[in-house]
Image (cartoon, rainbow, N blue to C red; front, side, top):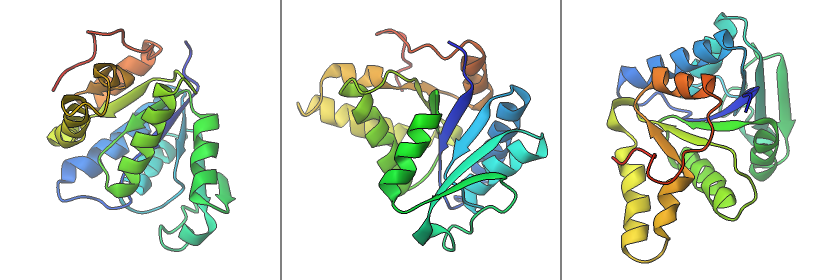
Amino acid sequence: MRIAAAAVFCGSRPGVDPAFMQAARELGMGLAQAGITLVYGGGNVGLMGSVADGAISRNGAVYGVIPTFLRDREVMHHGVMDLEVTETMHERKTRMFARADVFLILPGGLGTFDELMEIMTWRQLGLHDKPILIVDIAGWSRFVVAAVDAAIAQGFASPTARDLFEVVPDVAAALSRLSEGATPATPGEVERL
């Protein structure tokens, strides 16, 4: 499968570890160098701004989607030439989903958790089979994965929920998976943290 566009879900804040911002910038640069369009939330702040800046610094294609009410709060990125303004958050996520061949999850807060859970749920329901890669910068993903494991252990999710996503240790590993076509992992191949 040829990856033409990758949606990146990530924080609109920088986080406390400088590794988060650096990883976001490296991911943007890597996507641009691979000829993969960055699809992201359209903001100029936090990890969102950093991933876009990275792609722009390497003349990469960037498609941003931002809802009207967040245009000022997330400081719409004026360096992005292909920027769509939507009326709602749901419309934003729908547009990002439609443009992406794969989803890359970087550190973030409640908005990032929402985007990840929704895209995993859609995959579980058979609405898509696009790969979902959680990029484990500085160990941040262990808490997200622990929540999924807890839902499985408590009988609220099937053990196959772990097959909906793949955890990769860093940006280099994520870019390597994309160069391979990021075909979905088969059961047993998904890294267990």
